[in-house]
Image 1 (spheres, rainbow, N blue to C red):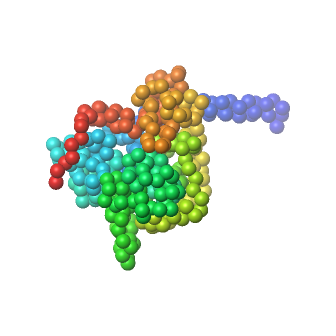
Image 2: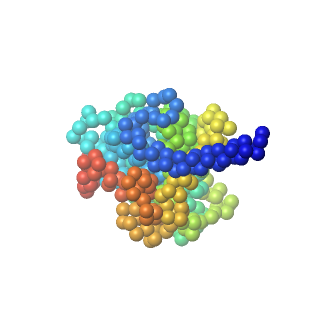
Image 3: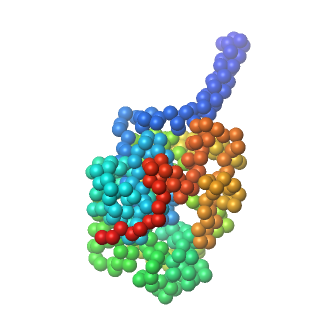
Length: 390
């Protein structure tokens, strides 16, 4: 090959790299905004549009909620929204906890995803038979640490202890099962899944209930492997990669996260033994799903997801990272601290406009502001919630 030929080839290669980089930048916003009709850019399968998400507490579920909100809103899907910010929690779910269910029982709902205590017979009154059920779990030790920070001022058991280590060392004396909001302090995931968080270890009962959950839920994600979880969810729902892109929401600043030594961690697991059984069961089935997905394919798709997220951070965020809530000046983007937890938020770049601004705002909306936004879009004004009587 001559010098001119080699030079021409190099120039073409450089031009290809530049054009590809520019194309990715343009396609990011286009990719997120073009499909208002619900069509898919992915493989030849039908995207699922009837979805039930059990939003368990302190399991990265707020980020999942944001993904579902954005997906449904982009396709004009109908959400089964609550009167306020939850669906009757901590009562077991009733169909009447959905804002407009009583007035229009024939209405088609596509997505049910706000906080509830799961109860399948009532969920089935609201959601179609072909609905896809999923939830997310987290290691009970990290979940308990997070719950102690978030609910220290809410749970009487936590109020009595100066630290989670102190609580774990004397949990039996601090915890009173009959007190309001006691469930935050013991087996919180088990409670959210609809079961008795104080139940005794009857032979075979826990295994039977886990089998019941296995038959009900099509997929259970694992918070510690969040990106892998989203790829499994994407595959199961037949969605596109852009549908599961995210920024982490409702996360705490590192300074408000406490570490537990091995001895205290073991005490926390023993105290939350039902959550530990739940976690071990679905963690095992999760990795079976990962194996079926394929290791090489998983690694490739993880790289693509993280590349997309990094590009979105560059597009949307000032400095590309989350900040303390007091630094967020835009009211509807400002997160709310909870208990001892200092919540991180985001500052958007000042030069955003049009579709890029809309996309970036939706990705960083705090949960309560996003819910109000959806309620207005569905013509459901915010009202004071009144308990639905049996």
